[in-house]
Image 1 (tube, rainbow, N blue to C red):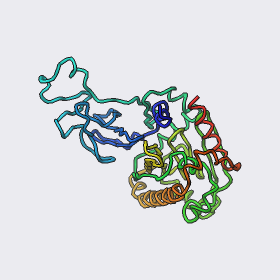
Image 2: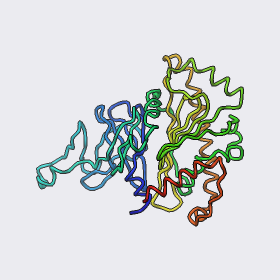
Image 3: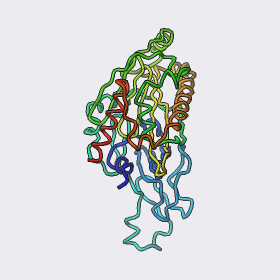
Image 4: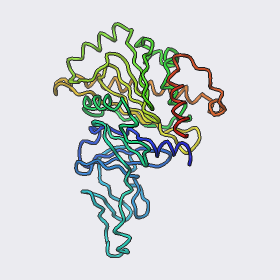
Length: 336
């Protein structure tokens, strides 16, 4: 089996937060290894499937997110209220048509975060370990999504992940964005498959401003600095002060040097409708900064030679790159 496909199939992947699909008919569509997975709110139940009509393989959804119905425009097959609805059903072989249905993926919840897998090698709690309760706590402090960004990184997914795991590049690549926080030395934490990093914010003006808006939020889980959680193999969740969370997926493509990148900004719960109105500009500004940071990351990642990585030449790692060493160890043990 292709190694990237093995990672996709055997691990759990954080794909969305419950508030991203708040109403019946809401959907999300993501691409992993050139195959599409759709998440859909079917009357309050979120179902996850491979976005293909079981009749002739037509894609149900072509947009990345929105509202609609699981309805095939080709021959009218549809899914609603937990069942397939098939026009002219009597014209098919009844033994075969009785087995027709969406190709569902396995799903499980960590608080209000939805994880998906194809054939997981572990339970979700086993894979997340001590991070399970932390993620669940974070999930209850999220009230919705304010930004959805998606495009193709022109690099191997491992290069994109390793870039996100180390802070050494911040002063050079993000001098006018993330670098403005004047982050402290990192404090790293590790579980069996995952890692997390915590920084205090050295820029006094930024720190004061962030503390000043705390009164507008109703949140329990907060680190008063910058933090980022890496969920092996393809996902990162980062935040400044816990006021919003950037959910990032770096899904491999079957095509070399191509990664499907998705970024969502998930908003912290506002204390009141008036507070939500006051925070509108803050969330818009956070989304714009996130987009710029990821653009800067992409520009440098696509300059990295994939052959340098594949030939095993990228061995020189500093103490600030120890999370990369942990990532590489996880890669090795995932294929044992």
